[in-house]
Image 1 (cartoon, one colour):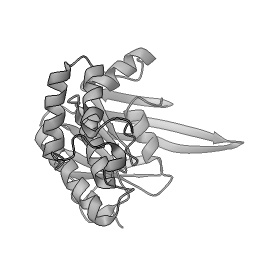
Image 2 (spheres, rainbow, N blue to C red):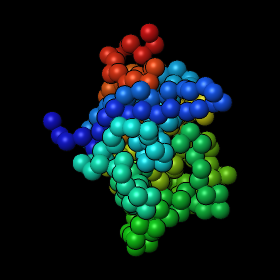
Image 3 (tube, rainbow, N blue to C red):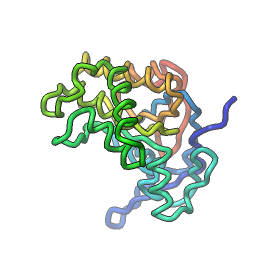
Length: 233
């Protein structure tokens, strides 16, 4: 078996509300391998977004270990964490968060140029990615001129623009109608399998979760892998 891209070991995270302690993560552990789409499910408030933020080095855990592509990241400085995020990670959110004044093509080009890629090469990669998700005719449309599904497919391409090793997605189809959600989900899974990126995808849609390679359930602060069909139990 290949080496994991993401290893989470014994993560703990507690929040305080007045005199009340809320232990969101309590020894959560998981591994994610290249080329697999792993669903993250659990009840609302279980801590799925918190887990993704910690895995994405956007938030610190109280304890435990986050290893990305063989590198322990818990003790990194803010600047080092930023470098890891830029070089090794891609993010997709429930709301696309595209830059409204730029076209779909430009939204996928800009992150590449920030990382030092030449504009011509960035445009070539952006065009290929957008074409692969059915947006070849929409390259020069701004977000306001795109449908919700087209905006989210553009956001997926932006998340993969810099060829990350790890993709973290938080309810990427949660703001879409069922038909559009299906199309966006299909495009996302296809890109994951073809690019070899390791992906952890939080979702409330158990039907979509069942179609991913594996499913992890977060409950009572723990992560457990569950068999297909068990997510709804």
